[in-house]
Amino acid sequence: MILKITKFGHACVRIDNGREALVIDPGVMSPQHGILAGVDHVLITHEHFDHVDWERLATAMAANPQLTVYTCPGVARHLVSVADRVRVVRHGETFTVGGFDVSVVGEKHHVSHPDFAPVDNVGFLVDGDVLHPGDALPVLDVGTLLVPGQAPWMTMSDLIRYLRAVKPRRAFAIHDGLLSDWGLRVLDETLAREGAALGVEVRRLAVGESVQVEPR
Image 1 (cartoon, helix red, strand yellow):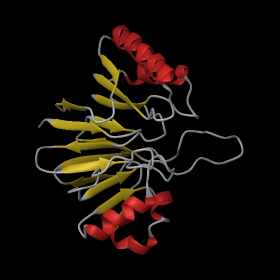
Image 2: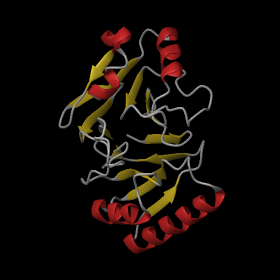
Image 3: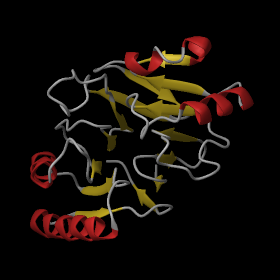
Image 4: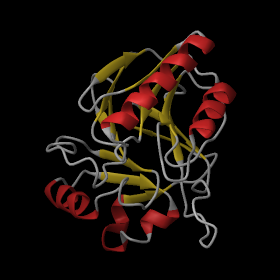
């Protein structure tokens, strides 16, 4: 089955299997209209504002009684008013929605501040191929890695080491909303070098860009 992956702003992607779609991490830094239109399945990795827009999510849930959220305990505690439509998922669990088989990976956000414990964070592996890790760097065998391109908790060396550890068949960078034009240029050059070294496609997805992948 071919999967269509569309990047919205920053860390938000929509994955379409030709029949249904799911959206991962529709945060405040993904302001495009219509992200959740016609979508019944929303997956949220963690509670930070760049990964979840509470107001938009509440509006979408009110407009669509079928919309269900799959997320970690840390996000679920903010959604008690709609708890019957929230599914808490944890590392090692699997679930099926809209024809997608989803595996849950990880438990905590990457360490980002010495004074604060990491919040909950779960990554989602869709159809055994497409991994959206949220704000963590889990190493596992995947075909398509939606790799964080830049973050306050992540250095360029972290990015390079992560790509080399996972060795995906292809990697598309997301999570780049804080970068200036110069920063995006540096990121693109780094990704191109790593792709050449690994012998696979490694590049950044532009906002609104779609790619098609075929799970193994």
